[in-house]
Image 1 (cartoon, rainbow, N blue to C red):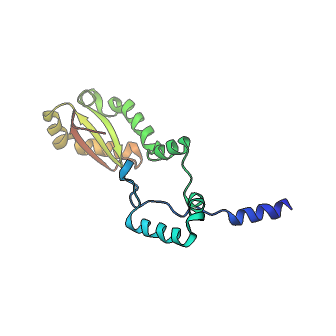
Image 2 (cartoon, one colour):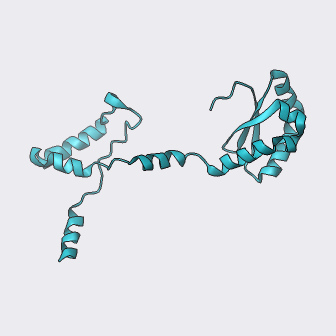
Image 3 (cartoon, one colour):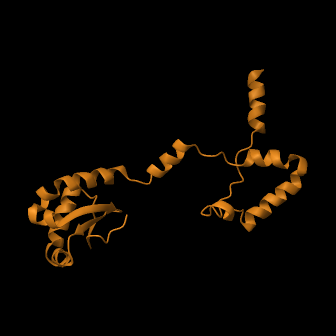
Length: 161
């Protein structure tokens, strides 16, 4: 009997199908349904009638995410392999390219295969761009096993995360 009751309960449960995603980027008072969503919800409310509208709408709304789910979703944006590789590269920067290069530059970010290297001054930036870029890129491509596809030098203080 319990299985029959559970089966009926599963049939009456409604899956969430009224998400408001058109204006998902809006927050606070500006977070209203779009015209399309408003017409959809109004048609459903007219069909259900005022006595059942609130109950059915509550069942159709997607469940709120818990804090651990939200944190996991944010952390998924960071590619763990890139973070680990960047940390290893920072630690071995001087041994790979020598004391002179390490004194004037440091890797600051790796995004979509592009390594951003911060350089101390405009003079060194010009020097790296014209004289050392191909040497550093070749060494990085070999050392990174495909993690680094391009190299960009930026002046210190110009990089924003």
